[in-house]
Length: 333
Image 1 (cartoon, rainbow, N blue to C red):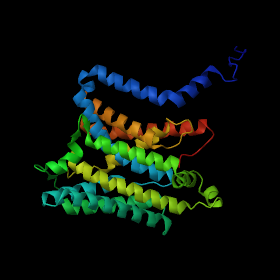
Image 2 (spheres, helix red, strand yellow; image 1 turned 120 degrees about the vertical axis):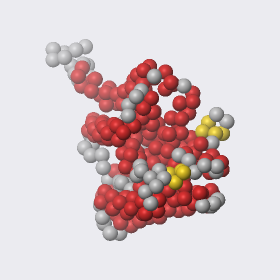
Image 3 (cartoon, rainbow, N blue to C red; image 1 turned 45 degrees about the vertical axis):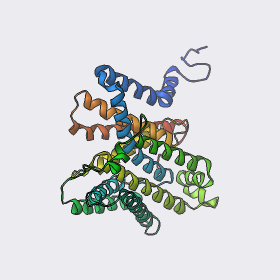
Image 4 (cartoon, one colour; image 1 turned 180 degrees about the horizontal axis):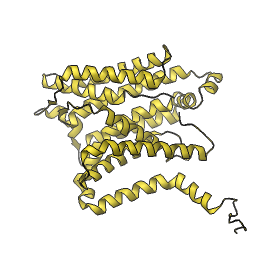
């Protein structure tokens, strides 16, 4: 029953109730509506071949976003993520074209990613440099090394079926890379939600001071998060080179970074508590890939995608902030 001032029995006005609905379910509803509109405008969007292509495209983005998510969960921030992927992709393409076995390339890519994670963690934990500044510096260093390595030229790969299978192969009707992402998603979900180390990581990221009082080391959690995140990025770089049949001369790291952050923050709005989660990140990552694909099919220039992705990131952060405030929290970092 409504009162004279228009409030409901729960004490909330209609406007407040709609506000709650929007902050809790608006993201998901909005994503579904956007994809439906894209599909209606271009029937090609919902064809099986295009959906499989979206899954492959989204897998690369989702891997980067998952690496960002675990670092964010631990209270860190990694601006070097895209640069790590781009560097490893170029190095992988160069080594494969030079005759190196793809397993050696895969292991080296993972190792480089882990080293990048260790360096980021050391800059933040030992030298006490803010994560934003530390990882920004690493990003510029890696971008310079990549340009020195490829001399500003693309490194194409053709005729390497074993290596190409990583990013382009199928297991039955399912792209192999999608299976890898699902395995990664399951492993990270179990680690973060079902192990003591993962729960400590959440505690350290949400409130470092309180975590210390409970005997949890925020710096140790951040170190582990950076290394795991780096491992994922190294693996992603190898798969990226395989998916693209080589590496591009254009520095794509910034686009990866923006998209990955947008996926992480957008995914957090799926949770009732506004908590970062690998499941939410994966769903949001696939949505962003589908959106990019759909916009291009509908005639939007590829050159406009950076601006669109940046807008998605801003909207994602705003939604995350609103959701956090709805449950009584103020900050998202």
